[in-house]
Length: 431
Image (cartoon, rainbow, N blue to C red):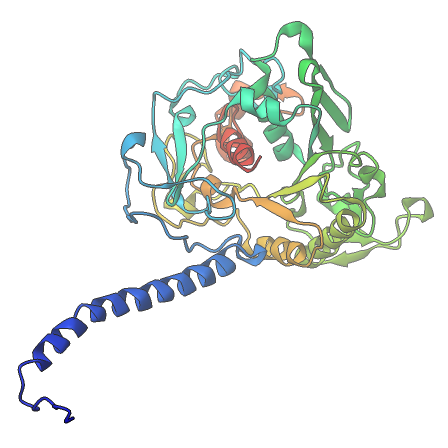
């Protein structure tokens, strides 16, 4: 039996080539998919490490667009951004979008728990646009704050904000955003010099604030020492404060602005009872790092991450130099009525070196700490500070003081309702 072998010139070779062609695009697609997955994994690891809290690169979104300038509110039905997931998306990059239809959940007249310091409308502020800007991250949709869901999440739990007066503002904002839903006879507020507690009795929940402006112990915790040169910090101890942080389900810490006095930090090791003469003057970043390590050691030694969630609110920016946003003859934040529209603006009131210290300390901690990264988004909001619509020394500013904003405008604290509501919107999204 003989085998027949086709001749080389036989037309049968053409169909075999034709059969190979469709496989080439398929191979290309497979290679592209593998490359994309590798890049996506690398991007996630890089971006979501704690050391990248002030980096400005974004995670991937469905339909990326990079626009500048003021933009109109976008229809949620046409929104192609991902639903918010703290593991997948960052709130750092985005824009403030004006939306008059957005109304705050409270006013400084409807919420009885606001300090006069932050009650700008009651103190005479007439413009209201600063209350109608909403933060839209580039990559994801930030869920609206829902008081009912927030209270259900807190049922049977203690939520405590720990830090300075800016953290107190975030606490008051959170209380005001939920309290309107609770009947009068089922809520209460007990104020103390250090520790204040709002109780939602029906939910067996508390929303608390604990005053610790440095987190570590200082001779200026109470009463406050006005002259920074006279303040002394026990950078090796949180014991005076931390006994109040135990058995809390959700802890939200912050500390920044009190460290930024412009003078060296008098740092003490050991008890104040042994005298205050044994201090050492340290540069601010060094003292800050030592103090944060002391706080971190307490968290790692005392917090059970299976029972307690820990958050750290990044630094709240100050706006005391109007030249930062191009107003050489301005009076700090006074009379500003719109956010800065320049993408990636970073003013002198936000110290990247200090933010890096926080990132490096948290990176080495055993207990997971989630950042509420409010710095960059708040830095745009030169329009939302209390300015001259506030008090000083327990008294409202006089007409004479209001007429001198360069010396009396408060460009550190925020009007409520206002920017801290967005901070709590981010916290709510994490919860």
